[in-house]
Length: 394
Image (tube, rainbow, N blue to C red; front, side, top):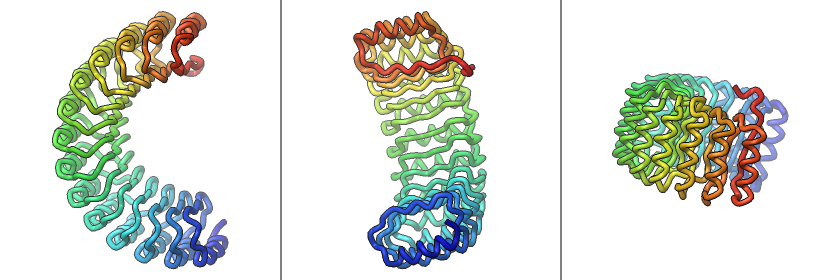
């Protein structure tokens, strides 16, 4: 489309009051086009959702959109991820958020706002009363600025989702976020995957979870969390009554960490989804989790894919649990190096299990015989079993 196309569209939007969603993804309208769109947003009273992903939006363009937000009273969703916004543009957007009273969702993922830009947005959060979802993933924020975001959460009373994935934040930031969680009463989803939070940072978050009564989703995938961190989280799960989804995939949990989490599952009554893919859990950890499934009555989804050391023995332990568990509906055992023997145990479990709806066994070597076991079992059960070739899986 480019800038000239944006001008024509802007002219139309100043008169059209029925269009509510506009997707301009990958049109490279740039700063000039942004000025035209900004003019339209000042007058348009119908548009509620605007997608501007991959449009060469820089700081100047961001300033135009920020100016529009200070006057527009209908836009609720602004998606400007995968652009070129740096700290100056973030400052303008932060200023706009101090005054705007309608925007609910702001997606700034994969820009270059850095620590200074994040601080401006953090300051705005202390005054904004409408934003509920803020996505700042992939912005190279770092620890110092992320601490300011934690401070912003102490005063903000509307934000429900904060995405800080892939921002080089570590234990220090985790402590500040934990301090905020002790007092914040609105945040329900915190995404911290692909960062540098270790056992010390997780300890702070776990301590906060024992007091927090609103967070429902915590994503810590791909952080250097070990068995000690898992122990801290497990202790928190024994007391927390609101968390429903916990993602610890691609960490260093191991069998000992799995044992701690399994013990927590025997007492926790709210967690429904636990993801432990690629976390170094073997057949011993599988046995602990199996024991937990014999007692837990709330977990519905358990993800254990890429647990290479589970093998047939781990599959056997989990199969035993499936014969007695009445709540689990999704079990992902993809690429755990399960073969025919493990497949037979799992298939036998499906003959009597009445709640599991999805069993994922992609990239396992169960072969024709293992497949036959499942074929026979599924004549009595309606579980969806996903089995794929082992080619290129290991």
